[in-house]
Structure formats: C-alpha cells, structure tokens
Length: 295
Image 1: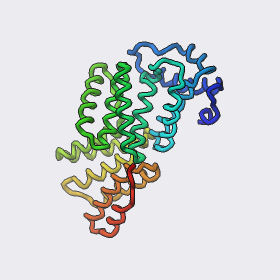
Image 2: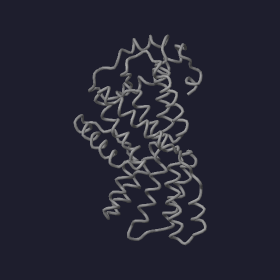
Image 3: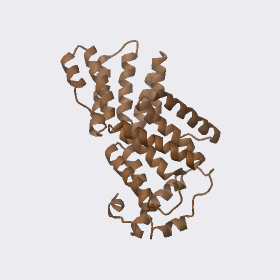
Image 4: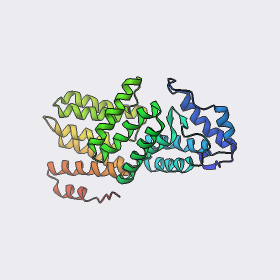
C-alpha cells in the first residue's frame, strides 16, 4: 500500500514492487493458456510506462474489496482503469491469466452496486462483456460472464444474468476451471435448499458459508450471507424471529460499516419485516425509513 502511495510512473523501484505483486498472482495461476508477455520486457517498461502502477491498483482493489473495504477498493479500480489507456503494452495485459481492464471493470461493477450506483454498475458490466468478446481470450471469457451476471442479478436483470451464467458455466466445463467465490455461492445454495423445503441442508450450507468467511477473511459478501441466513431461519417450519432478527441486525451493521448502501437496503428491508412479525411495529417503521438512496 505504501508503494502505491509513493509510486510515480517514472519510479522504477516502486513499479517493480507493484509488478512483483502481479507476478505472484501470475505464478499461482493455471498454465493452460498461451504464455503472458515476457516479464523482462515488462520490467523494462517500468522506466517508461504506467503498467506496473495500473496492475498494482487492480491488485489492491481486489484486496480491499474482498476484505470488506468496498469504497477503497472502488477507488483503486478507478485509478487502475484511468491508467489503462496510458499503458504501453498490448490490449491483452494479463496477470492471473485474465485481461486487466476486464477484471477491473467486473469488480468495479460489483463495488459500484454495493455502494449504491446500480446504473453505473450495469454500464461497467456491459463494457466488460464487450471487451471480453473483443479479446476472445478463453480464461477472460470464462470469468467475465459469471462476474457480470452477479451485477445483473443484484439489479434484477434475471434474463441477462441467466444467459451470462449459462455461457460462463459452459466455458468453465469446457476448460475444467472453477472460479466461484465460495461463501457467496454457498449462501445461495443454502437458499435454494430452503426454497425446496430442505431446511436441514440449507442450515448446514449457510453455517458453512459463515464459518468459511471467518477462516478466509473474505468479507465482501458478509452482509448478504448474514441476510440470507435470516431469510432461511424465517422460512423454516419453525421460524425463530429472534434468531432471524439477530442475523439481520448483523447484516445491517456490516453493510453500514462498509458503506455498502445496496447491502444495507436489502438487510434493512428484511430487518423491518422481522421486527413487524415480532410485533415491534414502531422499530420496524424506523428501519424501513433509514433513507438509503440509490443513484
């Protein structure tokens, strides 16, 4: 982080530090794709190009977003994308086997939705899909539809999301890869079981999703996972309003701490409904009027 604050495009030392972050990601990625451009060439580019700084901001964006600092993560994606047009490498600037611009757009899209900007989020998702198809790179095409579909799910564009998920899953099966974020997808698997009336399995999966977040430190989906936990409790044959209320309150606290207005709105709606069920009408009205405004 200190390197990002101090680095300038002409600062070779800082550039190499940031390039090293990206090289670590590349070194741990699967190797079925064509090799990335020579690191020796990229290293020399530190003297004249903004590429290492661009990659560094993208990596820091991932780090901040997935540990729950959504606003700071979005800021790093903004900087990475602003620097992209100044880069001196070809369009396919891959670290971690995915095009850097497409990756930044996908994750900024989700960040923007969480922060309360659904229209801007959808614009980023659409642009990411457009760039991904133009590049035609297999691993980028695997990841982009799945990531873009999340924004469309959040914004209620279910037909688009279904088409993108179908495409992404087909690419995953074809290439033998799996890029799912475990706690988030596990929580929706739990909801699916609950909707089918299989509440024991649902509770098992949601408990596992919460415990996985505690182990991995992946906080970006924490508010939504806790909200879904509350939904499952209320949908069970023996609903426990008090337990559900505790889940919704936890979801609200997390979303407010993260400045995630969209998570807060979803959690607030559920919290208000839980309070209404338990007879706390005045408190329910206050929750429903907490005033989140989506731009």
